[in-house]
Length: 191
Image (tube, rainbow, N blue to C red; front, side):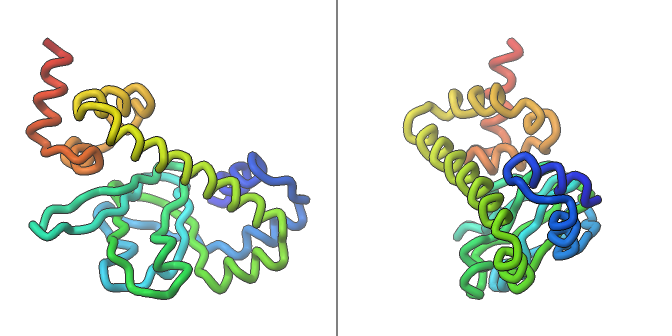
């Protein structure tokens, strides 16, 4: 299970094989059932999750009781409520498996110890967080710049695997649509 994380680390950081073996020992493997929650609103986010296989999502429940998906994580992506994880404060989010998943998790104390012992991992996580931040900026810009229909088509072009893999109601939630509106957009494209 650690081979995927090892390959991912080596894409972004230079680290010796013996050090990499020690780094990987900080992570715990976990199998997650479909729809199993790794985090619930009101609880502290205790781990940072690397997706080996499967898919996770982060969402909150709005004032109307509707789930709003804010993030997905497929293979080789990280997911955590970083505000809760770093502060120890209760989360406003849920993290849930969209499908049966295998993840590697690291708690905050272990992550801190690992980062102190292996500076290359600081560089690795900096690169990961910079990429995630850039993606969030791009998404926010599109929310203001594009029509709702253009948002869907742009997302479909950039992430075709999501559109094929993620249930339509979750994709609609992520894009800020109702499932019915997403069906209308898809139907237009087919006609």
